[in-house]
Image 1 (cartoon, rainbow, N blue to C red):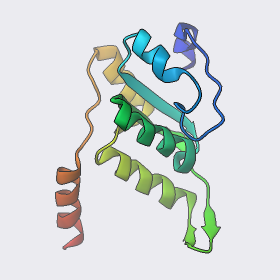
Image 2 (image 1 turned 120 degrees about the vertical axis):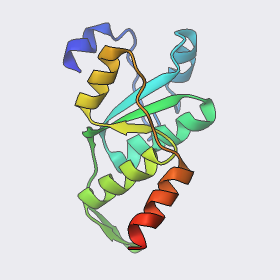
Image 3 (image 1 turned 90 degrees about the vertical axis):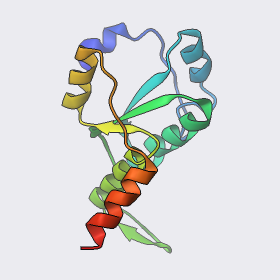
Amino acid sequence: MAQRADQATQVFTKVYASVFAGTGLEAWLRESNIDTITLTGFMTNNCVIGSVAAAEPLGFNVEVLSDATGAINIANEAGSASAQQIHETLMTLLHSNWAAVSTTDQWLSALNSGSALAGSNLIVSAAQGHEQYQR
C-alpha cells in the first residue's frame, strides 16, 4: 500500500463512520470516473461497515482487505462479542452481498493482473451457510 501512496491525488478528512458523509469523496470519485473503492483501517465494526453500507445506494463497488482492517472487543447491555468474532462475522456478512472481501496479497494480485475481486451474493452465501450448519 505504501508503494502506491504516492499515486493518491486527493486527501479527505472524515468525522463520521462513513467515508462519504460530509467529505466530498463521492463527488471526487465521480469526477475521476472511479467506481470501486478499497477499504482498510480501523474499525471493522464502525468505519468499515459504515462506509460499505453508504457506498451501496451510491452505486460504488467496494473491496475490503480483511487483513488490513480490525475490530475491538465490545460489551454493553445488549451483549458482548470479541474483536475476532466481530471481525470474522462482519467480513462474512460484507462478502455475502456488499463487498468483495480479500486479503492484501489477493488484492495486490488482482490489481497487478487487472482483474476485479469477486464477491459472493446473499443467495449463494445463504445456501452455503444452510449446508454448513445443517450437518
